[in-house]
Image 1 (cartoon, helix red, strand yellow):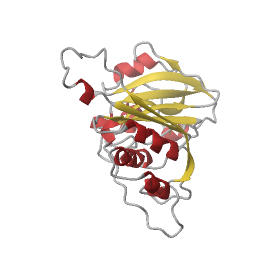
Image 2 (spheres, rainbow, N blue to C red):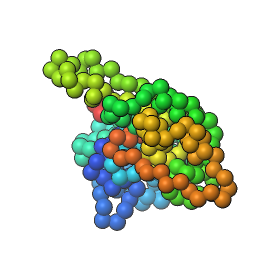
Image 3 (cartoon, rainbow, N blue to C red):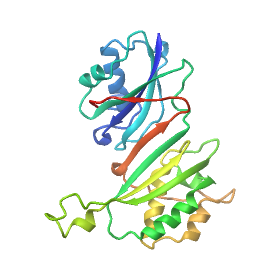
Image 4 (cartoon, one colour):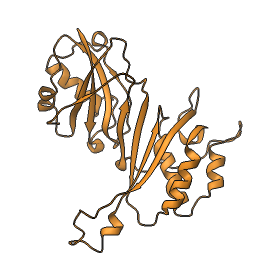
Length: 254
């Protein structure tokens, strides 16, 4: 029996999140159904089926990871032919029997901003404040044992659309040029990235000061939790999850 990790891509629009929920369509439920149908797994406990992350409803992925043990050789093409169009297996990797996908070396999230009123200089200033280790209690809805997290890097990129129909749509070109905000870290709290993105936007449009961002990341012990609204999930993508010593082989047809 071998243990395999699979990298999963999905369009989150028509899913109620990744994690299984009664009577709702979820990514995890679809994956388990098709893996069982094809004979890769039967009993979830016996196969030690594990997931790396539980993305919210509407959030997309190019790099979420599951792992399981199977006596059958895992064939990516066979699984993809069975899966619906909004889920695909992108890559696979052999892993040790003790491998648990939630213990990652790095996660990368990308938020795509379609706004013409953003000050890119201010976005980069906010990024510098977020980098490093902070108390992110104001950036989650759940009470957890620890809300300290480390942001390893944040990259702000304005997409170059020179090759995309500039002649056909000259007036819309600048408005539709998206800004990519790529956030890198080992782990994230629930809703943390979407709340961070609300702060990014509010600073970039002049609604919030950089000093206030510093305050949000350094809350006093008895301060009430700040009411930061989350940005829409539709433009959030889990781009990648990386592990030390695990090499994924991508499928040419995925």
